[in-house]
Image 1 (cartoon, helix red, strand yellow):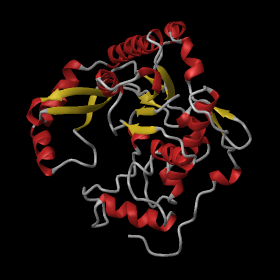
Image 2 (cartoon, helix red, strand yellow):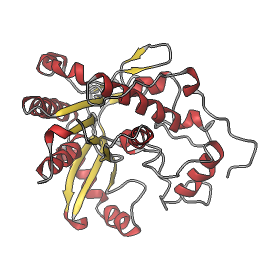
Image 3 (cartoon, rainbow, N blue to C red):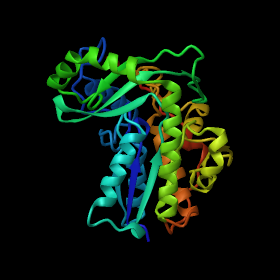
Length: 321
């Protein structure tokens, strides 16, 4: 029986958009990001615990377990801005632990696509993530293309988005030119996409050949169609996202976008954040919970997805700065 579930992924898993303890100044409000978020979400969801973890789908999955008295420990390793390289690294940290028990552990992975490069950065004695531009992207389908005329460009570098200390920001800013040169001289979009395919195929086959319990919450568009036969076994591990009419979606992002469940939608554009909102994360948690039951990892009754689960509360007629 599963006793421990580890979630891995990007900001979508981490609870991106809900950085309630961030002290970074929010644009045009005079408030910190955390204060501004609370001012909006206290209006929408007045009885919640205002933490990023609670507002994430792993946090809501943990709530579902607690409500049913399931003795399952939930750990969320997601982190905004980061991608697959951090996911591989944190996974191996887990299985290297002397207390790790493979048969009692389930891993749930959200794979990222390219434009994320993790490096160890000595001035901070820690890993940082380099985000860069190399593709054209359809936001609503998440389909990516490498432009014929390639031009890779630095987007940003961070140790921990929205939680940086002023010292971290100063050190990274002093090396901005270095990171710009790194992307310009060492990053090639096509090469990075090929590397992503290789690494994911190796990683997934490692999981399969060693009989790890795993599911995939989102896989993005990161497999070359000519290589798909080497990972076709993952189809049974991909979480199926269903709505109240039992319609199945392509994945987590497809489910969120087609049902207009972004933070921007949820807050009537008071917050123009394009991550999934709190209503979405509750629904994602329910779908993953149901798929854990279907896959035999949890022995419980499935949760009915209802039309009212998709309803977003309306902001009350009170002023939100």
